[in-house]
Amino acid sequence: VFEKIVPSKTVTIMAVGPMLHEAVKAAEKMTKVGLGAVVVNPSIVNHPDLETLNHCLNLSDGYLVTAEDHQLVGGMGAQITHVLLRKGVRLKLASLGVNDEFGQSAYKASELYQKHGIDAEAIEKAAVSLLIPNT
Image 1 (cartoon, rainbow, N blue to C red):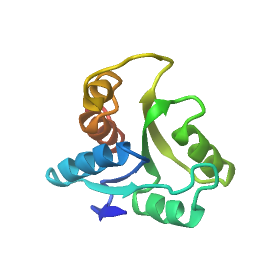
Image 2: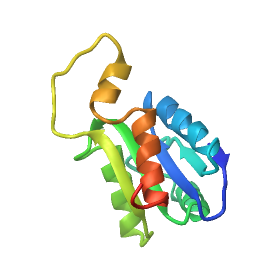
Image 3: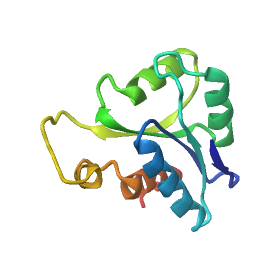
Image 4: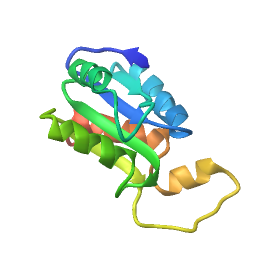
């Protein structure tokens, strides 16, 4: 877990697999401009560690960005936020992932991350938009 807490200006970013690297890059960029981030790598998507997630979401006042290189529908973000909402956890949410597209290829994964708006820059933008609306 990457943690840099800034009171009332902190967001939790949840990512798995190769997206974890993008999430940490986004968090590091945010801390350079005075915003906080908690990056979480859930080890089990279909049975999340609610104690850890609740702790992180309490640090960020419920602000959550999920980022995945998977379809949004039925993906990590959908599964985990569903569990959290069923447990009564209040969220202010931005979900980033592939939106109903299949079959793209590229020389580098970073090209696809940028194309689908799931790279570090997109994660940072989504997080800042949650923390500071109308930016």
